[in-house]
Length: 517
Image (tube, rainbow, N blue to C red):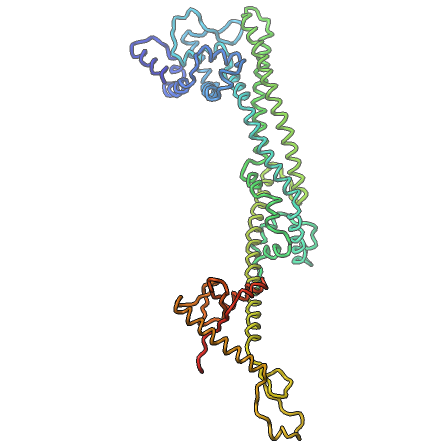
């Protein structure tokens, strides 16, 4: 604070500067105002003229919000301005005009003021009602930012109401919930209802079943499985982020209060415009003509500022009315009571956001349940098919001579008087059985040789696909490829089930090592 430090040095040298602000407000408050005064970085004359003329070019105050905010804090209290004016009158710096209740600067006063006191006295004497003018400048400088913020809040409500109103997935879920409610409450006063409130959706997950053997743990899981609505479709139609921006932001009452606050500040600017207009048209004797012209210019400038604010407020009023009607229509469509303050609409969107999260969680659990069941069924089918393949490959075609059965057991003769009943022929093997047995023996020998040769090279023959089975305990086959890899029967069947040509690439088959017994 260069200005404050230099003045302090002058005071130490015995300067005669008068501290009007210290006399009026005390040293503690004057010190705080001096800190603000040091950050303005604008000469006192330029600052006073900008306030008195309402910054006609907009370059000194309106375009510099930090400077305007500092000045706003300096003159925000009328009681402090009145105390400073009273101290200036008592010190002889100001004098009351004879034709009006305003103070004028005493030209021949031999009193030098410090920087802060000179600024405050100059604002009181030249700007007249500096607080009203600075507030009007602040309103004009910030009205667009406030309007943009309020417009964003209005659009959040509109987007949430539009998503809920256009959602077909939510309507299907509500229909299922209504059907369940009427079924459960059949025969009571709560049954045969034509609608259900959204608050009922929050109770679905807490309504649990009493049967242990059922797959639905709560009523929401039952709704998920029978509504036929994927959670992704529900979240696409009603994005949770849209609902969250509404129920975590301002309510409709808060938005309306913000618009009313802007309108209140606009009314203060209109009142100041009226005062300036009356000062510009006064015909009282002894009035300075330059002040009359100055007031007329300030009144015209204030009228332009008020017109700009009216344009922003008009758009906000229209947007808020449309949003309010849209939200009320959505609440009315789902049977919710219309609220006056706007708080229940926020709670309504919060309940819906919570329900969508619960629905998504239960739907994910339902998909996991279906995947586990499909996996169990797939494993059962693979096991059954594997058992059938192994059973068909076993050589059990033992057929006695002259028998037409394929059971492998010798059948008794049809006639008890035949010679075969007393002299049965010895058990013989057919030609097909002999070929099958020879092929089986060759298969066992080749498997044993292959297992021994690969065991010497790789120690343990492990399935190249599952990395779990080995040739000593599990049936399988070697490939004809250059790597001569071995695959267990499970992986062999699984691949050949999807691709019939895959089996042709296999060469030598293996079986587990069987003991001599």
